[in-house]
Image 1 (tube, rainbow, N blue to C red):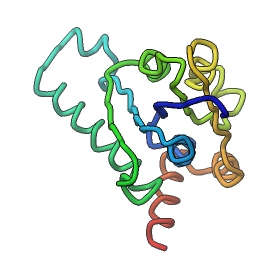
Image 2 (cartoon, rainbow, N blue to C red; image 1 turned 180 degrees about the horizontal axis):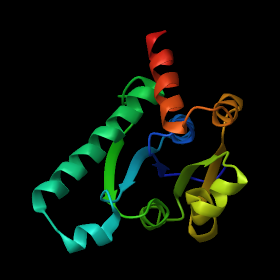
Image 3 (cartoon, rainbow, N blue to C red; image 1 turned 180 degrees about the vertical axis):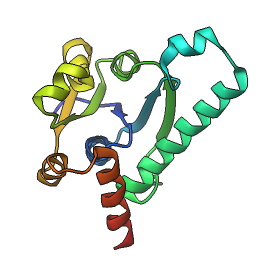
Length: 175
């Protein structure tokens, strides 16, 4: 990352991989004396189609508030809170994560940081990879942060992924 970096944009969804990406983004921002823009993209429960069939302004406000809370919680889980030694912006965007990140990281002096995850074959067939989308379409440098060994081990157990993440997060915060 020898080039000038003005802004480090990082995709956050609360997963183990995105928490690791958030930590890397802060490290890169400190190394380059850059600002951090943490982005959480969200869609309504049931998708945009369900929202179009039965739109409700109050529900949209609630969904946006929940997304903002998830983004703050990710900072707490990854770093114990938002650091005060860097310019930080927290952005929630309604839409698909890959598209939102690529649109925000629109300058040559941006660095886009995404978790690359460690998804199995079946999961790759069923869901799109935000990291791959960004690597293929971004106009700036992209840093794909690989999953840690611990994350890979956790993803191969019998517990559902969301439950494992909550258990691990609580265990780490208790220390």
